[in-house]
Image (cartoon, rainbow, N blue to C red; front, side, top):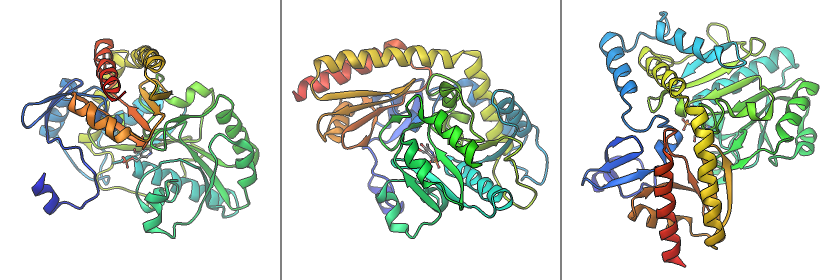
Length: 389
Ligand SMILES: Cc1ncc(COP(=O)(O)O)c(C=O)c1O
């Protein structure tokens, strides 16, 4: 930890854990201490730690071909794109390496489309409490003032309150090209959109001829109990972005679009590493395993169980104010600003999670988490809150 502080930029407030290895939902530090991991690499480790299918796919592909650049065709990229297109309402995929890059691609699609189809429109409407990434383009669409202010001026985005269709309708102007939303706001505090909101936004975008982008970087890949979160609202966006769970921990991102919005032509956008054979072989192996294990239905079932157990706890623990979320994307709102203290104590008791706000705990375990592991986490949380009371 001391060596880290001398050579790395101080971008992270890390937990005092030096992680060494993992298996399933367990993580061990360099001193051999075990933790139950309900952080899951920040909603990335969908198959848990060290899944055999991922290790084997990466090893096999690494021994065959790692990187060629996109000047050549490579089969894993085409196969993963086919897999995603067959299971979604989208026609085409652009691969990159992270969630922020996926959103950058989506925003560039919207701008190019707006220039050609909406008289030069380029502005984007985003929601308060949104999180879309840390690049200059995506931090401009991210609400948290602490993330934005050191880098302002940031241009081209208009913010509206989340879940308020009238505010959004009022914000649409001649220069508006697109709307970007998370179906369940995650980093901003864990707020699922209401049942009416996303269908109303879809209708508004149709009426005003705007591009609708759903950022499913965190909610996609089964996290909320359906493969894509947006299907729970019965509507389809024009563009969807993915990253986190797509390759189970191997860096990858993707922007998916319908033919109408897939307006990039050669030279418009590119990535040296994007869609390289290693990342796409990893992605395909992880997606096939999610399907083989029927993990999306498992998430819906254990997610419901987790929320029921948390609601039981809420009835007994006055520090818990509210339980929110979908599937295995769960927030626990506390009555006091003690989330950090609670997390420190949970960690001492062997459970890792994180906090979204000073009052909000978030639990995003691997999608393979079992009912027994959820019981174990609940017991640790119960003991911790009882000790504080
Ligand atoms: C909804 C959403 N969009 C974008 C991002 C940014 O992804 P990345 O950190 O891979 O750039 C995140 C990361 O937490 C996210 O939750």
